[in-house]
Picture 1 (spheres, rainbow, N blue to C red):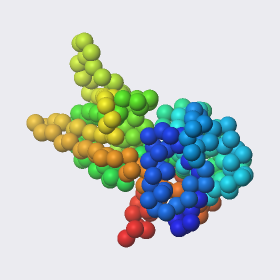
Picture 2 (cartoon, rainbow, N blue to C red):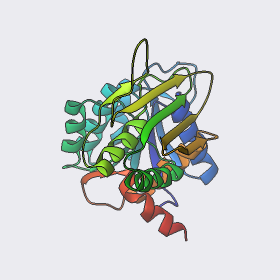
Picture 3 (cartoon, one colour):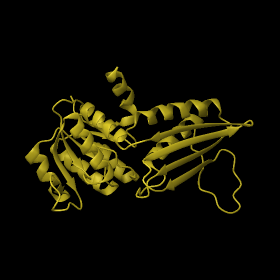
Picture 4 (cartoon, one colour):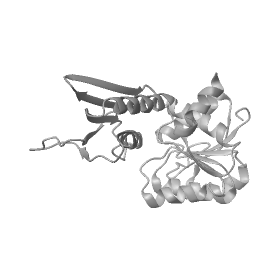
Length: 260
């Protein structure tokens, strides 16, 4: 279901919220409503976030797309679940308790969590997993770069990649965030480096080194529209699903098959 899809957008004036609205317009989809925590009264078609619950009833959206912060996202997901409206969230930085709240909401309505909605990231993760399995003794460093307004570090995508590396290695590895002073590398550790600068959309690089050779696997997003398009694809898929807690990584391949 994509044609005629009616979506609600949270964080509507943020970088990703605006990208989702623009992408929806390009697809000819209807933005049933848009809300933002600090909605400017002068802005057209953007309501204050306090009206979210009321707008769910008044506008009857098919699905919500959320890119906000962990606390806000949990609140939106909970309210959407109470109203029986599916919701996609690309918010990152959840702690264990917040993630549990998202999973609980999935018992009432379809909830989909995606750390990164770029399909290329899923391909990167597959490639990294294969490389780590083949080069199990090599040192690993992960570097991610984002715009200067990004709050969480490392990024949700970087954390996802690190989790997959741990799975490929058969267990969790020590993670060293940056290096300073006398800091000799320990066997098996993973160096993690987060950079924040300018308006960089998102870059992730995994470096494997050993046996007098290096292998570098990199993904660069040239525009936030990549993530917005992926979120809309996920939303279109989610509206036809039963209540449950879903992850974008698990459905990315299904979305690719649909396009073929």
